[in-house]
Image 1 (cartoon, rainbow, N blue to C red):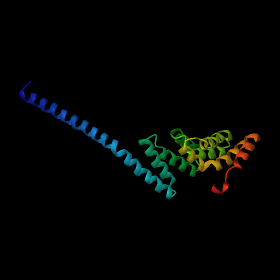
Image 2 (cartoon, helix red, strand yellow; image 1 turned 180 degrees about the vertical axis):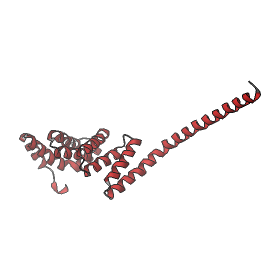
Image 3 (cartoon, one colour; image 1 turned 60 degrees about the vertical axis):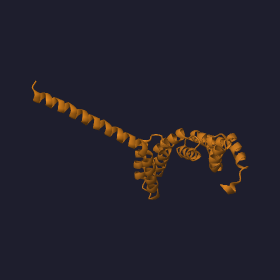
Image 4 (cartoon, rainbow, N blue to C red; image 1 turned 90 degrees about the vertical axis):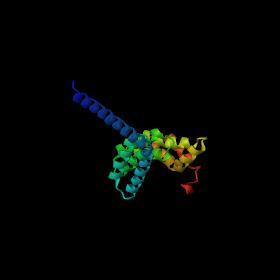
Amino acid sequence: MDSKECAYEHDHTRHMRVFYGRWVASILIVSFSLFFIKPVLIQLMLVRVSSYFASYSFENVVRMSKKIIFMDKDNAEAWYALGNAYRDQNRITESVAAYEKVFSLDPEDAQVCFNLGELYFEKGEFAKAAQYFDHIRIMAQSSDKSTKIKADNYLFQSLAMLQKCYESLGDLKKADQIQQELKYYDTSKY
């Protein structure tokens, strides 16, 4: 091997080390930046989702929510927005799936429980609907103040729907028990 070939190989090897070093550094910088930028980006995307809802652009809500979920599969706000958009488009099965994901992330979300109960009721799945309405009832009886407050906003409506579920299931004894329970609530605040 002559000196020109040796010099070429040496330069080529050095060039490749520099190239790969820069490539690795770029990947690390981008990854590090995304780690810190990701939460801000997600918040901006959630703001956009809200504006799409305001303009009744449900396809854009679905598209943007899916992008957020791609970035953060456990983002309850994005799943909730997706469930709402599907519901507004009368895509009940997809809406239920999205709400179920929110429920799995936060079983104390009374609004999601109520929405799931309503959707299952609409589908004629009264036993499943009753489970969600009863879950709100149980949360309202909780000793944890924050759980109780979350559930109290939906308690009266949940009890009324629970009574309808039991009537639809033919369980008139439970329906009467719920009717008696409903009498104790001040309906003026609901």
